[in-house]
Image (cartoon, rainbow, N blue to C red):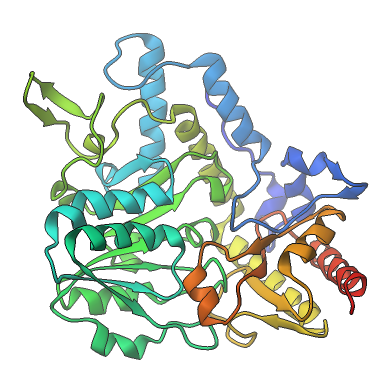
Length: 422
């Protein structure tokens, strides 16, 4: 049967026991080019603890069967484990109804579901969709496609020099034409934490729906739907110690009832004739075909691990690392932090550029020292243009990082700067 997460007692004190936590992640037993692994690309994906890997393989070893409708013992076991994760996610978000949780392949598909199943059918020419200048492409492209097809208007909340949203612009941007506001809780470039509850309150005063991209924030902070006051929230398992290919869309049940299915096929139907079909109740009418059953089942173990460690402790730990990293990085001549280095409304993400050193060259040198960072436009090209850069280096922290990782990074940057010095 499915393995339960085991988080050692040493996690439960005033701060996280990073040395003990790292022992639970087998990937850190590897060495790269004679160096230990320093993994600082958690905004892209997180590493997986052994208990999650055991849950994944344990399902295939002992309970592998398709979910729903089957009458065999295996199918009932698989269905119960799959639906137990749905209940677990509902509790993780503040005890929302289980029927408000739809499983998808990731944040991208969750956002696309809202765009195609609701906006495409509900909005008409001239209606407006409000985004921000800092959105990941996954929260831009779906809306561009819908807008192009239906003659909708895209508007964007601008970003200030220090990486915050220019909220005073909402006075002009929010109107009766605004039908949906889709905004990230945390920038994947600057780490800025946006005041989504305030944005939601102001948007709802105009009758607009509110969708929050929580891909970067949900893995790192305690998330309660009632605090966000949103109609929908999207996030991914793989960024929070879980398997790839598993996403979550929370949506208010009344909101889901307004939508037609996003995809058609098996599992999502109630009855089918040769020219007519009816749908299952929510959330199942949005889960066509065989889902990533093992991944969903193992995701529950990842949630157990995170909650046992404590989301508040994880956030506090990452903030300490960010401040320490700022001190180390700003001591490097010619290094500039995107979005500035003064405000505290940000999570454990920092992006930076160096004079005379391309981010890809920096990432290559660091890789030779076993240090993994991200280099490029981070699927946020409008924000890159806002900061007048084509690419940046990015570091992002998680539960298994420590100050030794930051020191290794700083030493690696020093080496790269010397190597590429003009």
